[in-house]
Length: 563
Image: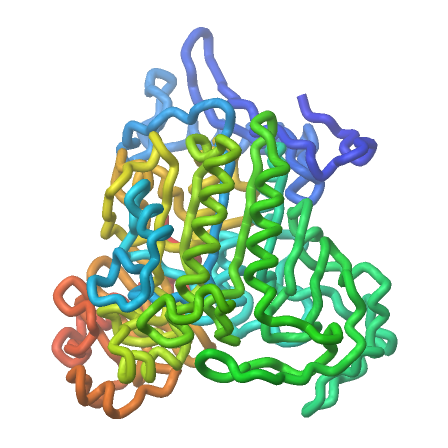
């Protein structure tokens, strides 16, 4: 029975019921059966009794009207065979997503035999779980990838670029995030780290709408820092937030939930040089003596502390988006010199150490055996990877072509490891196609929760693939970083609908050394099974394949992801 008095609840956002299976019978014969959502949070949806009855009637009529259907026909099943699935143990699993920033495919030690960067903790995670070699972020840059992962929706259906300093949120209140989905199932939820999805800054701006100085940014007194800032993680399903929002964007300060802890009182001034590359900081307000080197250690401390405060009676979801190894590249003293790949390599060692600390916290609390851990990165490595390869012989993109921002594989094919002892096979390498967009539908299936209408339309349930009990659900994925270029992957083939898949400038020495030649066609077509490095453009040789993939891309962009 549906509760129509949700607004009277002391905590309506937490009310949820996974839904009841509704069956129709004539005599003793089952005519049709389905499951309808009974109660969700107010934000997800509020269904009335009349709406539920209407849905049931529509379902019954459509079932009876189906060709070849009779009362003697057994209930319809999916056309695709349903693989045997592992039963979900009680209690429900904890979920931890560790999300590196600008980490390349070849920065994962176990994935790169020639790596100059030791990653023992990530290598351990790979041994204890499954490593996916064909996993992709939605974009070649950070905000869009985060949006897509948390919503189960391609970013390009709404936007392409990143959230800049003091931009509003890109998340929509009418859409349900992954945090809201699991929070409605009784999970404790926390985001600790880099948010970079925007806030409603106008709510604390002293003169709403006043633009920033193009060179100096906003002065510290442009905002009332004593007020709460709406539109952040707490507005989208997280119970707790701690972080610095974006490490190289103002305000340079610590956030606790929806407030800045210490008031920024000075404009940012960069001092000591970074270990590699530029500061890449945007001008704006900062806390006096803001310490960039303290950011990753503090975030890791808080993630560990949050885990330590959890208990076995209530499941938890921790989303820990790292600020490393993104610029500014600033490893702390204990990690300097720990790699053979310059400052970035040392920062990657520190990133790996943060992973290790989280894994140890899970071990020490006895959570490991009932925790799903997902590790990945938001996009490929930054432009400094070319100089790093030239000077230190470390290839951050691994065998792939391209870096961050690019439509080539190196821009979005990212490290990916999934572990859940006893549920996810250990010491396994999986080459099937998977996207970070799929975490939403996969976790919903894992928790046996129906996805609210109008949400996660591009997400596929990959639970059978994760557990090794069935094939992957995804055969296609769209790649995009900006409005001027798209690529479509289908099977072994990838079509780049642009003159070049490169957005980040490629040094001439790199193209010469590794055998890349100028493109003579309007686009690029590669068979990744035969040419993972994307050196042989088959665009002119297979026009039918080009047309097929172009049509599929158009279909996905205009009509939605085929099922």
